Each structure stands twice: as C-alpha cells, then as structure tokens.
Image (cartoon, rainbow, N blue to C red; front, side, top):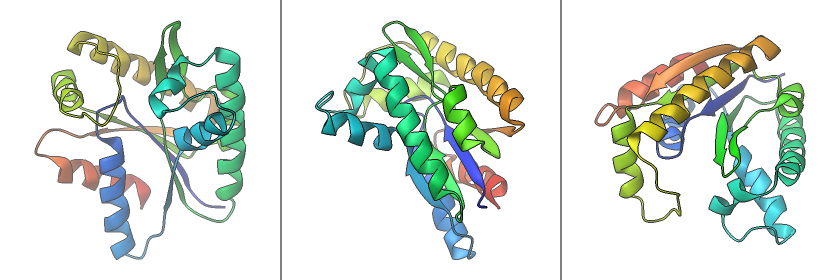
Length: 191
C-alpha cells in the first residue's frame, strides 16, 4: 500500500508549484510519487456530461452534482494508491455561491484515508497579487480579508479531516522568493 498525501491550498497559493518541485527533488533521490489532481478527475466527468466548459465553473455546480463527482474521483484515486505513493492535489474547501463546501467530505475521506494532509499557505496579500497576475484563470474577485478567512476555514476543516481519519496535518509556507523552503518542507513530509 502506497503513502497517500493530500496537498491543499486556496487558489493562487502555489500548491501545484510546490508539489512539482518536491516531486522533482524526490525523483532525483529515487523516491517515486504520482501526483493526481482531484479536480481534474471531477472536471473530466463533468465535461463529458456537458455540465461545464472550464474548470473554474466547477465550484458553481449544484451540491448533489459535486457530491457525485467527488465520489467518482475518490474511488478512482483510491484504486491508484494500492501500489504507489500518491500526492492528491486538491482543495480543503471550495468557495461556492452557497458558502464553503468541504473539499474532502466524509464520503471522500472514507475512500481515500490519507496518511497526511498538507496545507500550503502564505500571506493573503501575496495570494491576491498572484491571482491578479494570472490571466489564464477565471476567478471571482475577492480581497485579502476573504482569502484569509478561506485559509482559516481550511485549517478548521483539516482538523476535522484528521479527527476522522487519524492523519497528521502539516502546514507548508510558500512565501514569495522562498519557494525552495516550501519545497524542502514538503519533501520532508513525503520521504
């Protein structure tokens, strides 16, 4: 059975960049991980069903549709982890028009049973500037205070994930100009 590490963070925090750097470093050491994006699994199903045309529309889908897509993704990813170390790139929570939606609700956690949940965080002002500089994504505009609230909610919901699964929680900082430090911290968790 492989190690299952869930890596989360609010949009724009740079979690995928930290994941890619850690995987590159571990590969050089002979430690193999496969990274899977939970949202990509969900998006592929939603697109096939003509529910969305881009990833950023996913958070606006109805709760029941999101639940069904989450269940399908969790089942596929859990099967992959039977014989490989897996990094699951996802969100602890998703901000929807109806409020925050847990990214890893009970039905997902039951399937995945992660060993570790990593929260990639940084200062809300840095995240805001990264979002403003990323023309490739279609994001709802929000200020630094709303980003801070989202990060706080992610910490709270991650504590609930730990209580349900017995996993550990690690916070990795991805500060501007200190990417290597964040990568080092994630590598330490993944070894």
